[in-house]
Picture 1 (cartoon, rainbow over the protein chains, first blue to last red):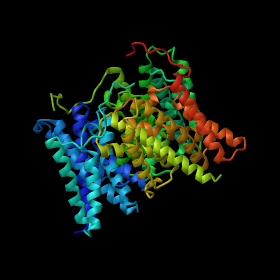
Picture 2 (tube, one colour):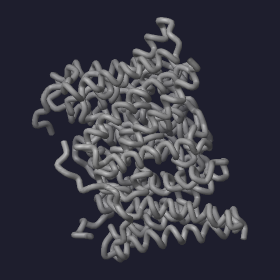
Picture 3 (cartoon, helix red, strand yellow):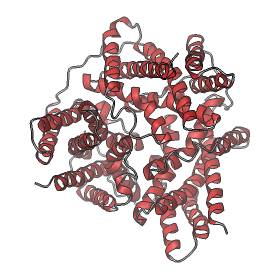
Picture 4 (cartoon, each protein chain N blue to C red):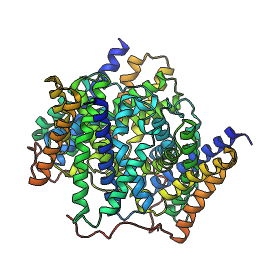
Length: 210
Length: 210
Length: 210
């Protein structure tokens, strides 16, 4: 398989599902059409933009390529059209977010490795890239962030990046390791959503602290 | 008219009114003097900073030009002095924000066009530039963002950028198209504030979703 | 003294204490282990990252140097281990944040001066660098920001940067001026925490405004 084509396809997919999650969040908040579009766009490109900025790749990739706008617009339109189908828009957006999280954790890790980051940094950067689009979405719309509310959110993103690095170490090509690692991240996040799994906590119950 | 002079004047104006909106928000929250100044500065330069970062123009423009600090300080002092005049500081800051939104949507669109962005991207970047200063202001001070609360906010910014691109297509010089397009954006936003206009919604009422 | 060694030590110290403050905030919110680690990392590197981005120094410093991850991990582990000791994790994190604020205000000011920023801009950039790590931490976890809640927060950061510039003007070397100015910033912030000092306000009480 052609590596570039595989990663380009993952990028389109990630943009689309994050745009869907952004549009659904905006629709839940009863925003007007253009604000829904804008939220979809910012959510879609947000994670990749943070990644490019941290790596120093300028101008960020969507500035000279209007494809990103159309993919995100398609995501917004799909979200608007599919509203009546969803029993719960919140559930739908959590699943769309889970798909985006899985894909962008791999894309971010790969981009960092390509920029010669050490593996541990690349995995962290993948998780930043996977979670910041959703974070900006939630900040824009005054929603409590999934980062905070959901268990196994950061964990799934880190696991995806870790699986990707591990599979590359085992000698797999990135065109094969990428999709497999994205599935690993998604499976972990999906299990957490479906079965309400949580990772061991280390905090104490919050007392009446000052 | 000299194009550079027109755009420099728009930039000074935008900085000043956004600084006023930031200072008024800080004053409403009873912050101390230096925090008011800092909020004015961050709100004033915020939108243009995001724009420069996305376009890859470094260091961002205000790093080597202390003019921005003094303009924002002037905005903060004006806001402090004018407090007793305003019947409602919230109304005053919404109007200051509307002026800044109008001006920065044009400045952002122009900067993106100069960096060879396609028109649709340039209009989006203009809207990002126009709305992010206010967004950072609201995040800093835990206020619900205008992005979310106010109708016809993103729409006005996109209309300003769209009008600017359209007028350039019609053959107008940017020194003439810029101020006209800024007036278009401001008129739309002003009409929305005055007459409580809203753009057609596409969401359904939020049900008791999980 | 070797200037580079002094500033490198201040950087390690700042990373560590900000990581502690991030981890404690995450623990108070009952996050899982990896989310605690991630919050510690983002809080630790956040302020310096904003500084590097604004100055145009790419890739940001921690991309190719995995040291930052280990220092932040150490901060997170220290926070987890020390939880039972702290009567109040909120108090502990406010003190950790105060130490980080003091150190990063100097590091940010110095970095801006090295990039030929005018003194007033350098002091502002120091304050941005000192406060944004904590701001991102609070946004991530839906906490009200210290920027807003705490008096003499921005003021202490600006005072640190101002003291640093002043001491350099008096002819001190940066290896000596840096630690002294950081102590000045910390002393001001500590006095505010201990004695509940506040800076004169300029706002009016918020009336029932629209």
